Length: 257
Image (cartoon, rainbow, N blue to C red):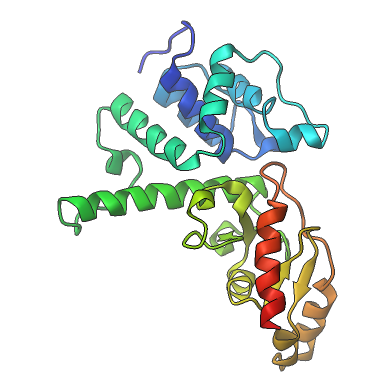
């Protein structure tokens, strides 16, 4: 698409907001792969996309609460798009996918790299496509918020990182794509969290179940688990874990003890 110097459109701004959710706050630059690819797809300059992503940081309540401010030259449209989609993450994910498909003159499944070759045409196929779009958005938003590092172990190998729901999506549909309902964990801690063998308090303190420690046979592993017990997690740069959702999971953890 040819680059335009005209005012930003609604569609371009929606795609830029999606990019804001996927780029680590400290890696918003003109060389960031997501910034560059977004600029190419929507026909804007790389620097203008970088600035637009920075503008959205001005609205983020968690950043403001921590004294972090984004760029101040946002437009009325920027604020309207933020207000429309903040806490309406599924709509953002799906609308962005449809916009990119239209701009690319291709299908949603192609632009989102979804293999539908073995899926039947119809409602089931649409359901799977929607599910994969949602899963990709949640994973990208959560992992980027934590700078692609496990918030407990510090492991920063992307292949070993997962986006863990604080409260399972089936139990809380309203927050199933909310990045503040997510933790970046390695698979071991993710599974322990889901099994209520590990919890994080509303004050962001790691709690290891006695069951997990007592069942560990290797002393060095047991020592490691005991070492991280009562330690604070590494907090994300944005989309801070929701304290109310952490409290709901922590109550389940204590009941399972």
